Amino acid sequence: MRYILRNRCNLLALAAMLACMALATGCASTARLSQPAAVPEVFPGYVAGYLQSKALPNSLALLPPPPSAGSAAFAYDEAVSQKSISLRGSPRWTLANEDANTMFPRAAGTFSCALNAPITEQDMPHLYMVLRRVMMDASSSTDHAKKHYNRTRPFAANQAPICPTDEGKSYLKGGSYPSGHTAVGWAWALVLSEIAPEQIDAILARGRAFGESRIVCNVHWQSDVNEGRTMGAATVARLHADATFLADLEAAKVELATVRSRGLKPARDCAAEAAAMGK
Image (cartoon, rainbow, N blue to C red):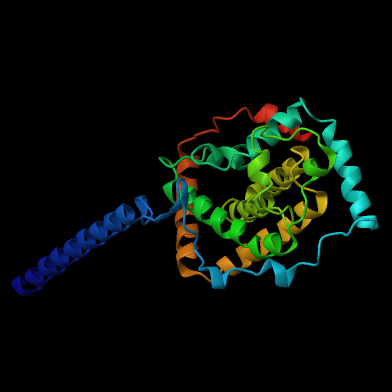
C-alpha cells in the first residue's frame, strides 16, 4: 500500500513538474512572440523586406509594355485621368492625399477601418512589422519595369495639380509604370485578407481604393494601377515560400484575436472614409 501511495505521489509530483514546465514554455513562447525580430532600415523610416532582390518577382518579365500613344488603351488612360481631375478638393481627394503617405506609424492605420481594428506597433507589433516589410518587397518588385519604360506621369502631360502638392519633383525621378504604391496597397490587402478572412470584402475594397487614389492624385495612369496590382499579387505569392513571413503572419493572427477580445476599435473616422470611397 505504501509502495502504491509512494508511486502515486511520485506520479503526481511528476505531473505537477511537467505542468509547470509546460506553463513556463508557454510563457516563454508568448514572450518570444510579443515582439518581432529587429529588422534593419534600408533608408530612414523604411525597413528591409523579407525577400532578397533576386527573389522578387521581375516586373519587366511579367508585365506587357505600357499603352502606347494613340492606342485605345492609352485613350482610356487619358479619359480616366481627366475624369479624376474633377475630384480635386473633394472628400475623395482628401482620402487620396492620406493614401499617399506611406510613412509609419501613420500608414499603419490605412486598413484599420476595413479590418475593424486598430493597427498599432503597441497592440500588434508583428502585424505592424509585416506591413512595413511587405511594403518594401511589393514596392521593389516594380523597379525593373519602372526603370526600363520610364513612363511619363499624367501630371507632366496635363499640368493639373497633384497630391501631395509638394511631391512633383520626386515623382518625376521615377517612371509611372507600374504603380509602386498600388503594388503595396494590394499586397497589404491580400495579406490582411488572410489574417481576417471574415473582413475580406471590406479589405479588398480598401486595397482597390488605395490604388485608385494614385489616379485621383494625378500621379499615375489607370494602366499603371492595374499592373501595380499584378505585382502586389505576385509579391504576396512569392512571400508564401518564405518561412519568416509565414511565421510572422501566424503571430499577427494571434495578435488580431487578442485585439478583438479587448474590443479595441479603429481610431480613424471610418464613416468619413466609407463616404469618400462611395460606400
